[in-house]
Length: 395
Image 1: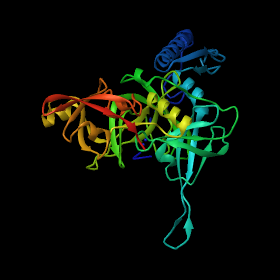
Image 2 (image 1 turned 30 degrees about the vertical axis):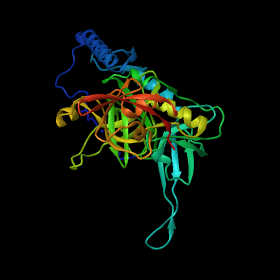
Image 3 (image 1 turned 60 degrees about the vertical axis):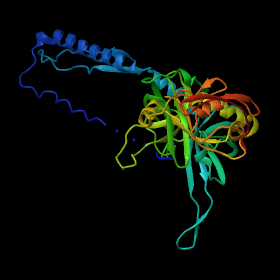
């Protein structure tokens, strides 16, 4: 995984029976029976509210022995049947989650002997023809790729296509029958605070590890290892090495994201906890569809390098607009250059679609096709300028 991420409770033991001084009085047996039943019901009620537990309470007799000693004649039996949403989600999605193993090219060690390493990540089956979504960085250097299914079978896989360097998504394919599938949900419907579950092969060894958290934020931008990704889901569900490419799932058991990276520390070296990112399912669905159909993603090419503007950046640098794409470079012989776009311009709209935090530059581009003609709305030195551009297909 790019920079990738992980704990417990101790419960004091109950005092031994008979630790209290004195002998229980026989006349209190009914009261004690009622008290125990009430306590158990209260505990189960609380548990049900917190975790969706349904319980069946079977209490044995509390009668005493001869002489009314009041001993516990039959131990109280409590049977709990857990029926929570999280358990249902895991049962529903886990069979479709796989471990992806990439065998790297052989390397020569200091002794001169060749050795081979492998990288591992996760993936999820999205099509009965054996198509699996995973991360591009999981399969990037693999000479051969294999997949370990949830049932333990290990199968060879072929690389169908990748979307490097934009979304860190790749599609691979295996040949097998009766494959379990996971379905996509609508990532645009996510709200901060919503519960989500991450499933993947943590550290490569612990297959189908389940962690739970919430949606911590939306429309995040992440930069690292030469890649900038926009419109990401931020979550505090624990994501470790090996979780890359695994699904982030909502309470309905639908994929709402594909886990891609996590922040471990700041640039100053300060530790960071609970900041992971996932690619939204609506992006995954479209990119996956194109990779399956043509082995690549047909992206319209404008030919610029940009910096996404946020209200914070606009305030810091005194920019005339609060949202948009600040043009850092215009590539030679590109549609942007032919349209008259300049370095320092702020692109605010493409074809009437505003560029903002919810619709970053790359997401807006994906609304169009190569060869589309559009009007670019630009803020240049505080004045609005409109330019005409025609996209070409990115090679």
